[in-house]
View (tube, rainbow, N blue to C red):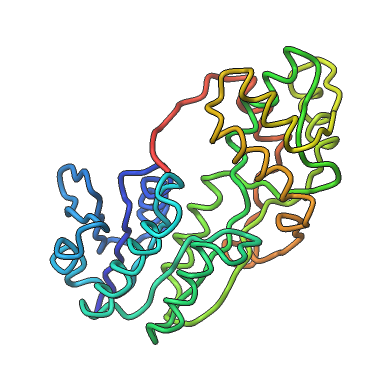
Amino acid sequence: MHTTLLVAGASGHLGRLVLQHLRRLGAHHLIATTRTPSSGQRYADFDNADSLPAAFAGAQRMLLISTALGYAGPRRVAQHRNAIDAAVRAGVKSIVYTSLLGAVNDDHTQTETMLRDSGLPHIILRNAYYMEPLRDTLAAAAGCGKLVSAATIGRAAYITRDDCALAAAHALLLPPATRQLDIVGPQALSGADLAKIGSEAFGKPIAFSAVGPGERADMLAAQGTPPQLARMIAHVEKALDSGMMDSTSKDYTALTGRQACTLRDFLLRRTRAPERLTDGG
């Protein structure tokens, strides 16, 4: 008997990539749900619990992609609660959830608690920060010769979105079980490491400079970043000093059977050829 897999958030960056990997891995019985469905997809809005039973009907395993950062806080927790409750009622047998490496007392940890309380087998993928934004950051740093961050000694094991999608596809294909996996890149990189790799990729010297979070937020705001977003970026950068993203886990390789892409390879691929952009999360 076949197993039907459901990808919630299928129209976003990550969801689309997961579906591509699932098909490449031989999965044929797929349900794709989104708030903006196209042909062959089902409508599902996590803000509207009534929309979810029909969307989830017939699925045995579900990938719950955490909703957008713009919904962070009580709204995102409520969205995830609606999705988990609907999955239980629809007879879903297991859930894979995209969480965040180093999450503490936030929306992700609340969602992890809800999954434990649901009684369903579940796999929590604690993803490191995406590598993709670093390309523009380092390209800009190459232009001015300086990479500035509120992090001083913090390291992060950045990983590509595509590698996260492959990990999610493999996790969704596993038999139901409860596990937590750290999905990280092959290297935990400091700001100085980023500057060195960026210099090599773009062929221009980049110096690394650490500043206080207040000064960093002011710098970003002066460059046109909305003040609230500037403060959030500075906070996220400074949080790296806690070690939250400093991981050498081998879970990705054990799950997928391959090595994750390095930052150097990622940058060199995209400095030598035009990048095809997609939208979503």
